Length: 271
Image (tube, rainbow, N blue to C red):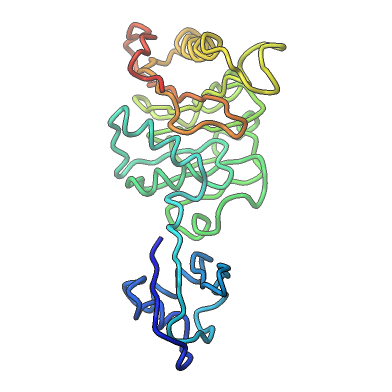
């Protein structure tokens, strides 16, 4: 966070002007955007209060703090980023389907890495972040359950499918998704062990046994290979955990004709 201080309150000025003059924003326009995003606060007798609008009159010498904005619109973006870095995958120019898009963390991550088009699908309504809704590269597909999606939902197969779904096993998500994937295309799916293991194997919704978690990952990769004809390309532990502290994993699967040997040696992919 950055700070500025002054030597008194001699006059009043617009908040965006003061913020830019203090060097906490490279321009007045940038200062406006920071204020409108709710990231700027001013010190009022020891209390940090939000600056509510760019034109808010503020005293000269007001001490401002600026919070760093989140990199992605949702925590999922950081999870997907772990996989893109681990597998060294380039997204530039690719088309993708985001299954279980929610607020759009995965979608945002793909766009920031150069994806040309993302179809953001979710069974819910009104969840996708407004910034993504207004992005011409994003097609918002709301109120659609992937299990019942029409094959002509999108105009052409995509290069990549990403999936982050809750309260459902990937065994039910992956099969209906395949109709939208190009030959040679890839899938990056978030395995949430708490939705893959059997009854009684969680502690208040958390899978605490690492062996059980890895078994859940292995089961999904084996299912994808044996039942769907996909080639497992490895997995990596998510860099951040789920809401209750569940360790999650992203598996990479590819639609190929050659069946590679399933490799579950995870010694370098665990936290």
